[in-house]
Length: 335
Image 1 (cartoon, rainbow, N blue to C red):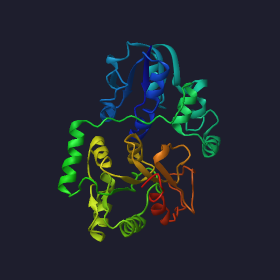
Image 2 (tube, helix red, strand yellow):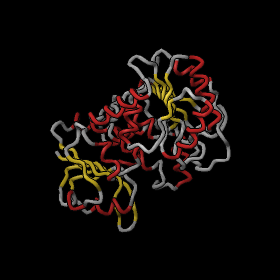
Image 3 (tube, helix red, strand yellow):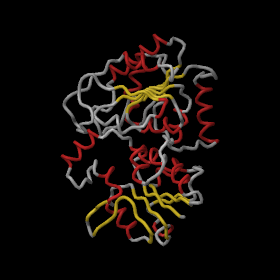
Image 4 (cartoon, rainbow, N blue to C red):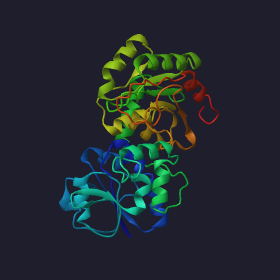
């Protein structure tokens, strides 16, 4: 049995899709599984014990002549699907190119009916997405007829990655046994209200420090958060600012240092689930029900504002009861 998974991006989607690998291996015990992704996401898959080959989509010659018993195309990109549709396979699941139109197979409807590609159109798709109460992982297992037992995403930190984390700990006086809280409240620029503003972020950090005075607080973030996090550190000198231009795996190695991660619905959240971290995730305007936090996560929802509206520039700013973040940390399963 040979299986090809096509999932190029985004990075968080690549990570959460790896949750199907244990299920595929359980159903097809001798399966050889390959994966096609973007070059920048290869490191997220490298070292994965379930994968035989990792291909970069731009290198068509390395995979286009292969034949697979099953191709699982979970991307929604016409250019990608045109290439994949030309490959030999016994069964294609997911998206495919029908002339110059991108469509999807009947057995993949439970997921693609909820998105921009939906056969019902965007308006109804948004309604269906808001009503959906199954996680992405659960839907994938259902569609592929796999046995779902909350199998986690798969991420392998290399020795080099772990050493990066150890060096960071040494330079910032983080010792074994310290209660380390990661704060990852940024979420890029696509969704206006997917992240906490700087004022609320500062309030959350202050509440954490007040409740856990000996905690070490790491402020995480990518390039978009560098300036904001710099300003936060000026107000709260005790925080450890780890924002910057890290690679995905360096970012993962920093999350791996945390005992608990407070995070937006973002790449950081998906990395934390793969690393089996304790998570407090807040949501707006995306769906909290689509996200699987397993038994180590708590979802914080807005007390006012949109939820699962998927408006990128929603005019209603969400409001959170910031005490919920601290109450969530103190839940028995988290601390």
